[in-house]
Image 1 (cartoon, rainbow, N blue to C red):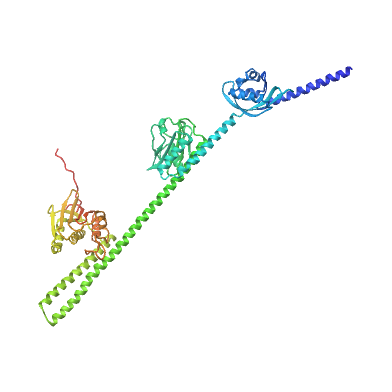
Image 2 (tube, rainbow, N blue to C red; image 1 turned 135 degrees about the vertical axis):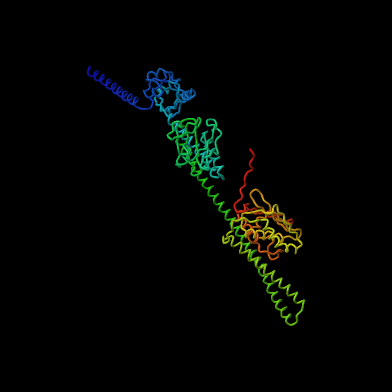
Length: 573
């Protein structure tokens, strides 16, 4: 009997020891896991907690934690009431309920609460066993990822407006607004390279809050902005006051900056009054935007080059068409100017031959007069042909440099009178007045005598040729620097917008076979070439139906041919 009782006691002891060992193992596990392990009862509240749970709530030991009112551990009292309601409804397990808890120092953290409800035979809750996992860092990471996703979506949507920018100005504006509005940075600016300087073209208004001035940076100077442009690499400056590069510029209250190069076009910078404010992720986004902007700027530059090339091609084509027209007009003129006098010469030569035969058969005074007239007409035709060939040859020689105009003193008054007297008979034949007005007996020009002769003959003969009524006025005078020749007629004139075309070869006020006036159309082109080779200038004023006025300015000179100095008047002391 005693043995049986002893065996029974030994069995109880063994069972108790087994339970004690199991509890020790459980306690060891509870103390060595990172999660907070707890047990609470409906009446007593928290009755067990491991060290991890105490650390999680900021208490030195589980004993200190167990002395706290359980309600004080919840940052959101409504959440505790929701938890109690779940338990009253007979819930047997709590699986991953997010709850914000309050630490001893008042700060909060987010915990993931899991647990099991232990009930008696009647279903009444006896205690709750479970664990709390601190997921604050995970929640922060999720929040950061969400913010990044929102930024990426916003930038993806907004980048379309950047890619559709139609000018450099628009690129700078869109880029600045994108970073300011989407990423939330205030110190945003775009600078484009112009004349060796990076000039601010688009700066967010908020920059003025901490950087009153918007400086331009020399590309070769010492600055973070110029450094990024020269190297072509993104420059990250966590603290401008501790920057490694030698930068003497005053950035005001700006403390940190990221500068992204835009290729050869310029740079884009993002700054903040807080050191290290621009994070790695945002820096990558800014670099991506900078790459997009550089692609758009390259495209705009290429489009501009293509437009310029197209415009040049159009201008060249227009010049070619104009040259073709001028060539056609010239050929028509040459056909007329050479064929007509040659026909006259041949015709009158035949007539002279017949008259000579008549004189041989029967001498007559009338035949002699007729022969004299034929001879005169032959001479006129030959002279017209010679003038045409001379004009074309002179233009060709001037353009090719075969004629070298000398620099000597030429009396413009004397030369004008001489040419005017040679052409006066032509004016008298048309009942035109050829009037000369000279401001002095001698006005010297630094020019070539042959060149002046060409200019005078072309201008005066043109004035007579294209004038039906009135006359031609020739004026010679001197300014402080120039000897001036003016030839004004009351002839047919032309539209002012076509005046410059007068100096182009083979161009006339009237062109084609039906034109009213003779001429090859090269006289004024020769005149302009000759004047320019004598360091002069020729201008024209014209109005259709009222006439034209040509003004030639040649350098004044002394009798020895030296350029005349213009001395300022000196006062008496």
